[in-house]
Image 1: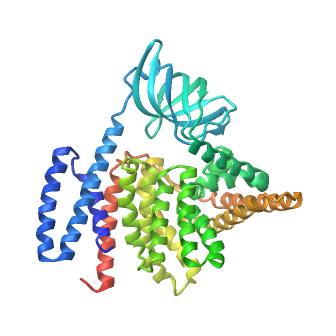
Image 2: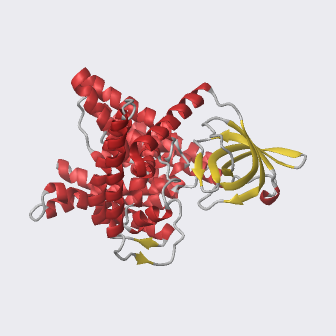
Image 3: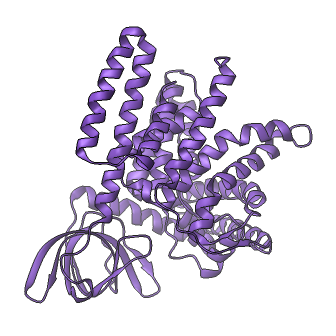
Length: 468
């Protein structure tokens, strides 16, 4: 896997710096193949490295072209005059204060008697009792399209018709809403927080709770990512290990992690976590060396291939920047802290510093404010959330036993734990933040940052292995 880090750096650099068009790609591909073939003649490792880096460059260029294409999408009709749309539900519909909202991939739009094709991502708000399952065909009468912050479009529906989803969509929706119902029955007043942590549903959280987490610098805890997926996969592996053995347990963890992501939806941070989880479990299964920087690099390349436009999203950038910061900064900080702090304390603090430093430019540029207290708050609230999630999963499982006392105990316990987490967030939220004007952070910032961090990672790897 030694060629993966430079390949990821090459992909990031290509996304940020190389103009993406078909002629450039073809010229570069021809040149790369020639260089790689000559490299193979001189030495197999050099040739393979060049070939993999060339693939990374082409992948980065393709991702940039895909992002540029998606940004150019605009309705063929005046947005404010569009009165009808047809499309397919992308995710699950969620309750809001005014009804429901759902992400829709729109393929047709209309104005009065005029109807034309389209390719738009729209957040549709509507008032209706029926939940739309992923893959459900939708037809809506709307009051026009409005540009949404961060890209895409928003529409408020006057009337909406939800068609029948596919069999797979019905199964997925049935499991999803069954889990949501089980959480509400077993978690009491802690249900909104548990639904946010397990299902990614934040519409039930109060504005106060979201504000407390934001001011405490730990709003990332509410976004489904590696920690959440790791807890789910670890529980599966721990349960299967004594029953079926190591190999079956690892495969079960990988399957459940993938199924969990398919159930929740392909948000960038969760997709990144899933790719890393699959790679990690595969390496453990075949007893191969495991290095975080190489796993992150491999996940970055696979992610660009699977979701080429995701790199333009803030969640993608923050997810990878945080991991790169943890990979590069945290190890040195842990060594410096060991004389004064035990490793269980130094490790989360170092990880928090690394993630905060690496992600600060994007956080400050997009939101205009930083909360450095999140470094300490994350080290405290993170473990509490992990315990709460584990207890919540167990509580949901045992609540299926038709014994009222079990549901009562589970409800009170999870309610108390959720209250403790919210109180901890309230305590840390009193620390001041660092404010300033928002900056125009380009989508390619993550690629440039990945390039810089990747170079540092590669240098450290060479120093560690003694190959200067």
